[in-house]
Image (tube, rainbow, N blue to C red; front, side, top):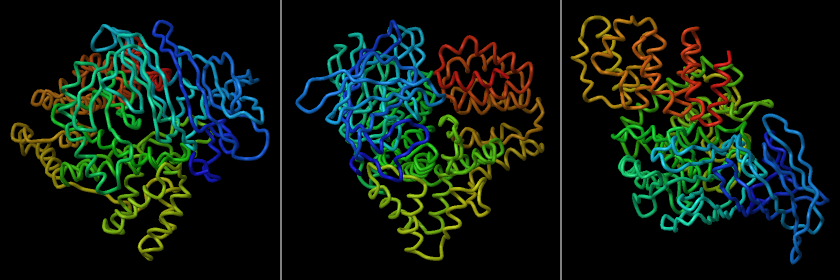
Amino acid sequence: MVSIGITAATARDPHSFANVEQVASTHLNLDIIVDFDRKVFEGTAEYDIKRLTPGAHPFVLDTRDLVIHKVEVKALDQDWELASFELAKALPPLGSKLTVTLPVTAKKVRIHYATRPEATGLQWLTPAQTAGKKHPYVFTESQPIHTRSWVPIQDTPALRLTYHARIRTPEDLKAVMSALNDPDAPRDGDYEFDMPHKIPPYLMALGVGDLYFKSMSENTGVYGEAYILDGAAAEFADTYKMMQVAEKMYGPYQWGRYDILMMPPSYPMGGMENPMLSFITPTVIAGDKSLVGLIAHELAHSWSGNLVTNANWNDLWLNEGTTSYVENRIMEEVYGPKRALMEQVLAVQGLHRGLKRLDPADTSLHANLDGRDPDDAFSEIPYDKGQLFLRYLEEKFGRARFDPFLKGYFTAHAFENISSEKFIAYLQANLLKKYPGVVSMEKVREWIYGTGLPEDAPNPTSNVFEVVAQQQSDWLGGKMQLSQIPTGEWTVHEWLYFITNLPKDLKAQHMAELDRAFDLTRSTNNEIAHAWLLQGLKHDYKAVTSRLREYLPVIGRKKLILPLYEQLATTPDGLKLAREIYVAAREGYHPSAQKALDKVLAQ
C-alpha cells in the first residue's frame, strides 16, 4: 500500500473520478508525438495497474477534453486485446470520467488518445511569441488538475507513480521533462525520459522548444532559449548553496539533479516545482539576485510537496505553507537574517491584504472547496498563513526542538501523501506530547480550521522597514526631501515596502514627485514595476497608462498582471482600457490566465 502512496486516509479525492483505492496505476509509459501544426499531442498512455481490493473493479481515470481513440488491455504473457470503455459527459471543473472494463487477468492498460488545441494544461506559442522568433514552443502546467488535459490519468495527488516517456518533436527542437534529462542528448526529435521516483501526477511536466543548457554546478544547471542562459545562470548561481543548507536542516536531497527550465514570458506562474526540473518565470531575473527567493521556494518543494505531498487540494497548505517556511529558512542561511526578516514582513503584509479581500470562509488553512475548481485554493492563505503557522510553532517550541521535528516529518512521510488530520496526529505525537504545555491541540485546530488569524499570530517587524517608514513619513510631512532618502542603498524589499505602504489618500502631486525622483514608472524590476503601476492606478496617476500598455502584454505571470487588470476594472474608464489591452494581449496568455482575466473583464 505505501509503495504506491495509497492509504485509507488519502484514497478518496473530491477532485478526481479515479478509484485509486480499488485499482491504481503504478507506472506510466507515455509515447506521444508533439504536433505543432495541429496544436495537439497524440499517442498512447500505457499503465501498469495494481488491484488493491477484491472484486472485478474497472479502471477509472480522469480526462479533460481528450479524444479517446481506443483502449487495450493485456494480461501477463498475452497479446494486447481491445477493451470496452466509457467516456462520460464532462462535469466542470473535473472533466470527463473514463471507465475501462478490466478482465480479471489484466495487468496493463493502453489508451490511444489525442489532446485538443484548447487543453488547459498546455500553452502553444508561435515563433513570434518566443525570444528567438524562429521556432515554436509548447509547455505544460499540470497543477492542480490539468495533467488530465494532456494525459488520461488518475489525476489525484493521493496517487504516486513512476513514468517513462518517449516524446517525438520536430528535429530542430529539444524536449525536457520532470525526469532524468540528458543535456548532451542529440537534437534528433526523438527523446526518452525516466522518472525513477514515485511522484503524484500533477508533477509530470514537459517543455519543447529551441532549448539549450548551461551548467551551474555538478548537479544544477539551466535550460532555456539561448538568450537567457548566461543571465539565468549568473542570477541563480547560489542554487547549489541553497541545496546544501536545505540538506543540512531537513535531510538529504533525494532527487539527484536539480535543474531549472527558464520559461517564456507568458508563463502564468512564478515557478513550478516539477521534480528535477523546476519551471521558472523570467520575471525574476533582476540582475542582482533580489528575487531569488523564488528559486529557494521551488527547491524547498523538493522536501515539502514533492517528497511529502498533500493528499488532495483542500490541504494545499501542507505543500505551500511548509515550503514557504522552508524557503525563508534557506534564505536566512544563504543571505542572512536581515533579508529573511524583510521577506517575512512583506509576506505577512500580503497576507493581511488577502484576509481583507477574501471571503472569511476561504481563510482557513484546510480549505473547503465544495465543488469548486482547485485553482481557487491558490491564494495568500495556503502560502503565507501556512508559513506563519509554522513560524508560530517555531517561536513557541524554539528551533532546537522544532527543527528536528520538521526534519523527522519529512523523513517519516517521504514519498507519501498526507492530510491535515494526519499532520495533526504526527504533530501531537512528536511535538505537543513530547513538550507538554507549550501549544494546545485547541490552538492547532484554530490555526488549521479556523478563519482569519489567531490573536497571538506572529507579527514580524523589521528595523530596516521602520527606518523606511519614518523616512516616508518625514517626506510626506515636509521634514525631508526625496533626495535626502538614501535609496541608492535600498534593496528591492525596501522599495516594495515603501511603494506598497504609500497612503491611500496620497495626492497626485506626490506621485508625480516620486516618479520624477526615481523614475518608478520605467523600472526594469518587474516586482517594483508591478507595485508602482498598481499604486498608480489606485491613485489615478495617469502617467502610468503608457507603461501599462507595454507591461501587460509581455508579462504572463498571474501574480503580476491579475491585480492590475482587477484594479483597472474598478472604474468605467479603467475597464475600457483593460479590455482594449486584453484584446491584443489575450492570445499570448496561458489558458489559466485567460480564464481568470475573462472573468474579471466580463463584469
